[in-house]
Length: 313
Image 1 (cartoon, rainbow, N blue to C red):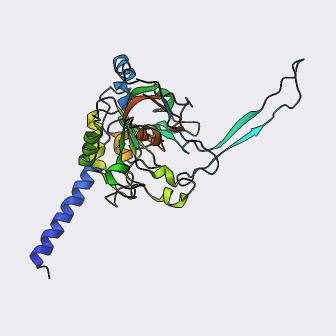
Image 2 (image 1 turned 45 degrees about the vertical axis):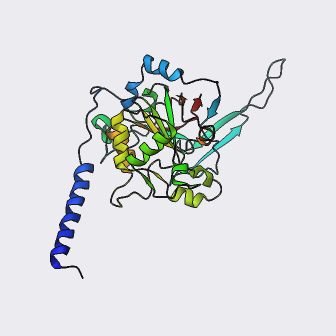
């Protein structure tokens, strides 16, 4: 049986750890190193020189589609849904060539399937990247600050880390937290160095559950923890992503925190978060570094949009 002294010591340690977490996650959102008017965060690191260097990764011209097909059955986070209605607004054929057409109407949320989550999507107590407050930028017609239309196309060196092989699991177990040590081990094994300006993607196997076990798919996932998030942010990556809906580990290692990794990447480092990115073929070809290209929809005032990035090697 533990002595009273030991119990008190354990209690003090627990309190200290709790205070440490509070201090880390209750801090104010820092101002951008790129100035008070900055709305694109780490994407400032993309330059003509970095693009030219990324282009040198293309050796054989093979193109990889990294976005998934989306329909009304695609599993989505909590309240989200999506479907398309296709109509013929005018059925009468026009002209001697009998011209006809059909149109599509999108109904639902833009955060279904492969997506980019911008800096207006995640905040800390309603304060977002560069100190922008929700009360100042939110409107039902779109955000007035940090909208995804502000972002340039992303053309960068892409890196994918095969966490399935590292853990020797077909689908890396939900709640598995990737540490800095884990990332460095995988990168070393692959011969893949993570550099400033990179887009870093993780392969967890979770998209294998889509359409097979949607309930499990939406209940959790494997991903990086806060230590690894800071590590990547301080390295100067411009975007991060994974083949699951959460990007970070769910459930989180600290039950008192809610999506702290996504929050940290956006508010502290201005890093874009990509979700449900298909990297299976890249890993199968051992294309661990490649040219990453994303030209996303420019919906003015959007906080997240569906995407279909490509990798080229």
